Length: 233
Image 1 (cartoon, one colour):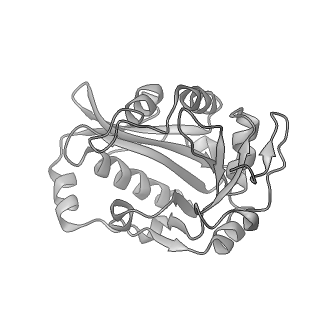
Image 2 (cartoon, rainbow, N blue to C red):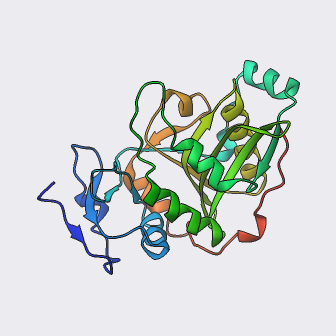
């Protein structure tokens, strides 16, 4: 990590993504800050922060990149049946801080979390600006699942999700993707591969292809009028 480029708090010039490490995959730089300006600059260049409590801010741009094109959404027969029979309510931007805090909670497989208090504050600031958004799943008045991410131009940058009830996050995610497809969003950034995302039709593409799709699409300010989204499962 000593050979990584280090950013200062006022340095918005991220290194070229092609200079990112191959191992660990996509590690690009360290330092900087989590101000809205830093984060917006990073995401517009296909870079995102990911670090743990005892680490400096680390910036990543993996290769390949996991993406989901909204019109390629796949919903399994079992999930489609669950969505049809579900009485859960899906909402947008009703409880952003509760959603990101739930995403930061302990997992069954680990006590660690990369969503630190610093990260929560940073993304709550982006939410106040109308950039970061949450999707909530409700069982009556109980929050049982959800996800959050950033909307910039025609791109949604997914960050994290949680579920306290079977299918709660899956229904939230599928509902969001269907809505984004109807609004002609071009791309959902899923960052890194997982079986969960693959089951919805997400796939890996070379970083160079991902980067060529960002400049014309990930512009902060466009499509803001669509938020908060009107959702139903």
